[in-house]
Length: 333
Image (cartoon, rainbow, N blue to C red):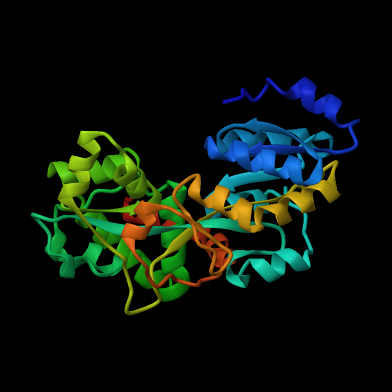
């Protein structure tokens, strides 16, 4: 990974170049190298890239202000994209191509989703009945007392899930759900999604929630330990009889002070192309946003099809702050 300071001189001198694009990215996947190379090959535009953690990049862009060399921000999770929007970092983009290829519920005026992931329920096959965890609401059922483990309620993945519950069911029901989940904790929240999956397989808890790409990574692993984990768990697509399973996104947008606005729009449009969609999605075991586009991913194929919640990603952004307040009140930390 390139250090945040490593490309400062390069990016500064790149301002003078005619065909250049400066990307700040919180995605750290090897397949993205082919993604950027494909853009340069197609357009002749050179790509300079700085990678870093989301919080570092947002702070850097904010501090750089109008002197920022950054053209495009790429990151994961709607709540993080919403944070960039709330900080006033993005510029509105009008593109008939993006509007035609990206479904309306997966874009806003100033940022766009380019791949999706689902937040599913994972349960221990030898300890929990799948019929008892068909919906997110079931995680708050007293039947699961002492069996739920999750990562922190302050993590963006859980904040986005909570935001979707607020948007679909209202604040009162969302808070009741959060309190019910906390009452069912097997232990205090800790670790990431993969840690939760492994805890279920080890019998530390009976059920958790996870983004699908963590499951796909384990499924595609050639390590015996990972395959042992997969053999002990079951997966449920929640809320299939209602709104559908909550999905989140990887996405990006053009920054307000982008020095190369034309190149920025071209890059965003490129990310919606068939080739880029395959790179962008398969690089992290996700699904393309362009309807009907097929990718070759055996783990996703094995997970099967599901009904996804079509709640606009802008709604996830709208309720992000309320989601955190509800989690805090519920003691979900």
